[in-house]
Image (cartoon, rainbow, N blue to C red; front, side, top):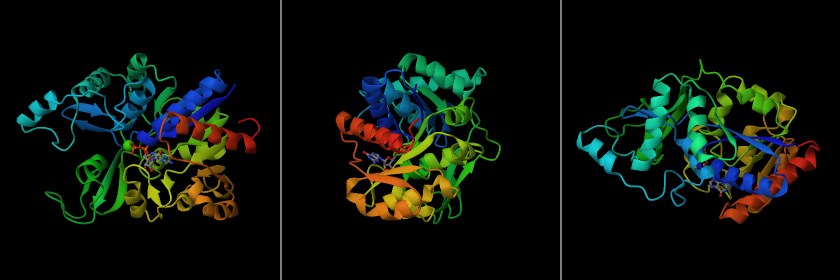
Length: 333
Ligand code: GDP
Ligand code: CA
């Protein structure tokens, strides 16, 4: 039986995993999928615990996502957040839909009554039935912050602001000098996370943000080591196509850590497992075929295939190509 573990951020990880589940349902209905989800974007807002990536994955796999936005629920209204704004509370640039608020209220209630984030997530998933087990990377809060390189509104250069403020309010347009994961030092992987990596026969890094999604998951003490020591093949899919982040602003994150926005540079940044990195194999887009020799030289087996997840069919084909590449290398994947 195939056990697959995916390390996901929000939209890229969620869409890839949805295609993977569709492909497996048709070809290997016994396969199980565990998704370890980034919680570095989580925050408290208006007294509620918001988990952007967990919710994007849960809604996407559970059929409750707003497809155009890639996050939140379809058919939303914003009556509650307008009322909160009328009190002068909350972050006006971070809108919470009324339906989405219900998720945050239930989660926050569970957390306040003593549930862990893992327990709260599994409770929410009872309703959404995502078809995969969703595990937060950690049950203890780890929150990504960005250090501003210049003044912005009420913030001063050198100040740390929450990643979501940099991403949503400033559209990643204000230069930052570094990302700091507050709480990382004392964080441990959530129950089941290390096991899911060690007992998988295939681990996939989907096309999620390599810095603030996958990078944050890998930074939780113990997770990178698990990836380095698992007997499973570790296969990644480039989130960069032809030198550009397909959706979102991953290039701004890569610039900050000094990695070029290219499929080759991101593959080399993850590195080969044979050389202290985390990848056995890497999928780049067909337009990035020129990256293959450098990746091969670095010990990363790579192929060039279409990486645009335009619709259900192209996404499922990408999942099939990922499985095929893994099986071409490791017969037990
Ligand atoms: P976020 O947490 O919502 O920002 O989502 P993720 O971290 O999962 O993924 C965001 C990344 O997904 C973006 O940086 C894009 O580069 C990548 N991405 C989005 N759509 C596609 C796609 O269709 N194909 C590929 N290869 N990458 C994509
Ligand atoms: Ca995210």
